[in-house]
Image (cartoon, rainbow, N blue to C red; front, side, top):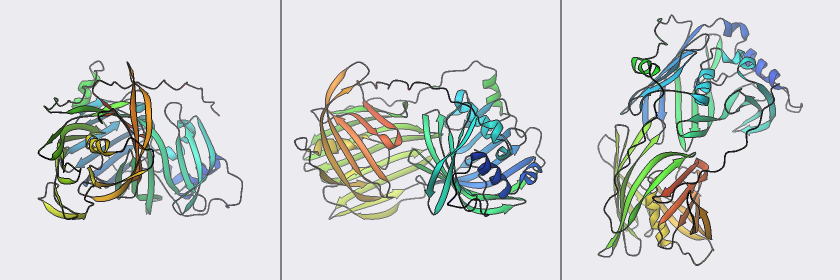
Length: 487
């Protein structure tokens, strides 16, 4: 039931009248099996092979995806992304593993392992009573054009999963959950669309997974059932077998670039959901009527390693941008942007590995130049520009390099005492709000010292925090644990 990217099934028959009281969860879940093919159709299947494509839309990364599954609890997922290589994961009912060219092999453990083992359950739509400790209908909600019932499934270990079933069709149109990963707990939403019949089962052929500001599109090209699979299809690869013979090892930390010589600058450590995931080193230099912010960094976004070779912004002494450059690698995919600003235009050459392509955007003369996500240090220019003597809203045009300009609103929230691991410091709090070029609402918070250096930052909607070198993150207290009753 919770094969979040792969096995979300759908149907097109009426389920319940809209004016009835909330139906019980077991009624919705059992009816779902019937309208998507019926129990007998599911039980006829013993193996399954899915062929499809995957695209990480923001980065333009595309590749192929093949998923093998067999009863009772075996699976293997193979993804091959352009410029990155092969990413594999699997389970044989006892272990769950993953290997990719950026991080190498690893065995999953704890809640992450339990989630993976549960996901590997074949015909899980029939087995929800076995897989979950509790199921309840918790309300209704509209998803796009669909009026939906919300069914929450609570496993014995791990976070609850909420399914959204269309009231009229019984169609499962959305799944919302929080998953435990190497980067901490990450909330995700999975939307299902483009429903087609494969054999005796109706299934969606388009899945959109949204998490941490990222979007992954999966398009199913074919589904095959009762395929004869070789005996070793679900056997772990040799590097995973080698790990199984060893005691669990401590994962290596990401490489941290050495501090760059500068007249001023700093180093930021970026956390996602409480786990360190990026490091940035930068300098700020003022000379010859110009201000230059220049630096580098690296990050791990799930299986993707990001190397920020350079992100540079040069302005005049009035903070009007003159030029900017961004050089980064997503895996093996090179992403280069060079931009010059003049006469209300940002003229860019953008190279994503296929040669430079020109792009021209209308840009305000005093626009703040930033990147779509990392690095965060270019926001130093905002810290230098914002008025800390008024709490009235201040308007700033913000240019996302290579994309478009959007309006931003900055509010000085006042001076605050900010706690760190070993000290408390009085800092100036700035809040920035607006929308991305894609229309997504975004809010960022910055705490800066009296020299306008960013000491702490936060992007609450993405679970992101950042801390200046010498100001260690103070972890929040753990939430009290509560026993979940099992019905």
